[in-house]
Image: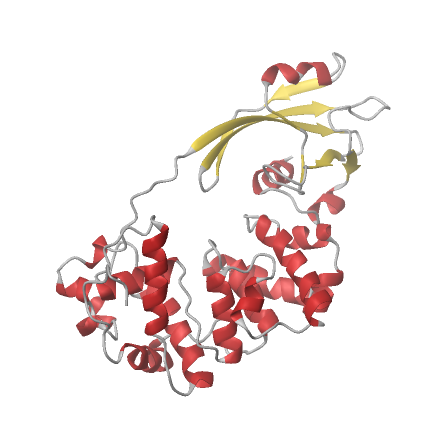
Length: 352
């Protein structure tokens, strides 16, 4: 047991959680009730830092296009990013594609059941590997995403700073000790789902419905009178900001000039309007005989960064292509609709 844990492990915690999930947990989500690792994995990746309500729109559409891991592995990256467009955190989509290819190449198209093997795949961390192993194979593996950290630190009154790696590892150790020990094929999926459901519906970041909680009488945080003070994480990631000038160049046929972003950096591998980091670089790319309109700037908020975006609209009437993007091309509405586009770029094009 962790030396920093000040309370004993609550007796009967796992069994109560399993029983509660069976009667009061969520059961209608489209990725529930399956032991198909492909579907569970897809939902877990989509749900990382994304609301369930948003994923509900993307999940069935993705499965319709790529019903199996083999189909996903064979798809082009453009097709994958196009379907992912709007979900954000596009590194997830790139890792998703690489992971599918690895499953096919290394494991003959069958997801491994061992959490350590799962962690060796692109984009699958310890918690995601545990979720797949628990839901699909009844493996005794602990998840520890944001919701679960909140539930466990409150139940245990665990006040160690989770921004310190050793303290988070200690919480992992405790999470593993709390896992069910019997009837794992049944209990592990239920228990894992129960932790997710409790954190999503009852034990919320700024509010707790303790009377609805199946372990409220076991909760040391509630006994201390202030469960909302858990979890403790003092290190804050500093926000930054960047300014970008976007060249929204259209021709008389209604096509827009788009280019693929580099493999690294902001909006990696997505298609975008040509982007410039300095306003003085804009004018040399727009001949004097081409009409130009500077639209009002707007802010697009990322997790840890604010993007100040300045759209420059240009009506291109010359026969030669713009020189703004060396790898660009003209795209019609039907063409760019299916591409992987950053959300603010897609919004600009939809308004045009």
